[in-house]
Image 1 (cartoon, helix red, strand yellow):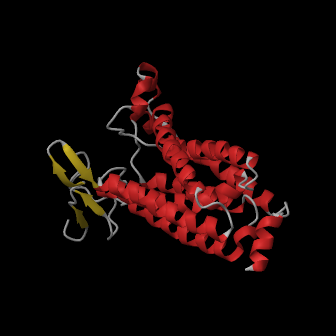
Image 2: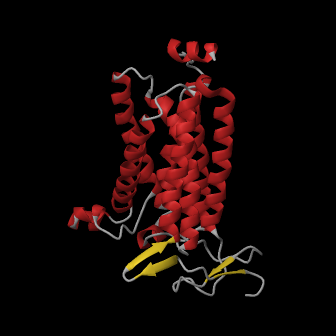
Length: 281
């Protein structure tokens, strides 16, 4: 036990009466707040209305929470959803599925881009998604680190030197395990820096759909592999050759490959307004 990392972090930062502030909630909120600052910077650099990021934030918050909640119950506890559909919007909001969040975000961005296209702001679906995946990667890093602070979504038993012993989790305490949350958090952080560099290099000339494709391939290929190191979330997965996270990751990776291939077959058309502003500056 002494050679492993003893993880005894209290998931609660402080509480006043029945109200408590937890690391997970703080990291979740920070992901959005920092992400929107980055999006404001991107909008400014590409001559888009910076004020639109406020609207985009609303779309993202609602889509992420609803998508993740509906996805969790639809994929992992469909019987609970059928019995009580309102559980999706009922506190304490335990249970969030990243695949559901992805579907929710893509749907919301499609609705957002349709509205902005009608206003002639040149914020097409692929333009928006290529930029938003930068901050989603950062948000993913924050959320998975929040899972670590909560001692949840733990890995399988292992004897690697960096194994964690999750003392706050009574179900898995005293057994060294893979810190799967940390693996995913660091992977998302690497992706965040790569996508930010990729955008900074190309900006408005970024091949449409390329960054969305890279995001989907990276996140869900690694998610497929990390599932081999993680405990199954629900009992029915124990009898499956591939668990639910792996099954849902396959179409996401295929979609990512499609967007990457398509992006380099389709020429990027630079709007005259953005190009002229860049020339005069």
